[in-house]
Length: 44
Image 1 (cartoon, helix red, strand yellow):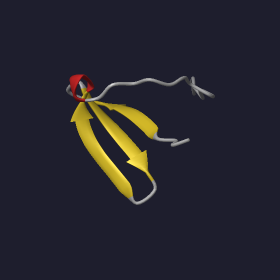
Image 2: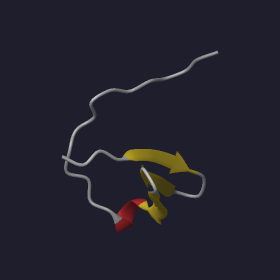
Image 3: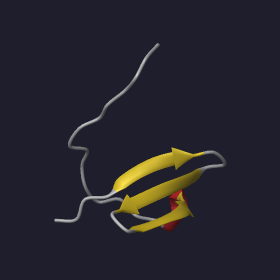
Image 4: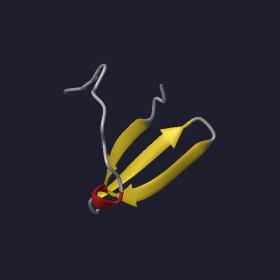
């Protein structure tokens, strides 16, 4: 199992992190084939 942290960035881009390896791409550059284990949302 590989776990990545995925962040939405401005301009329709995504940030993908996996320890020392991280990169930015567009949503159309990647294919997601997994599920969300947990989601944390902050509200004011």
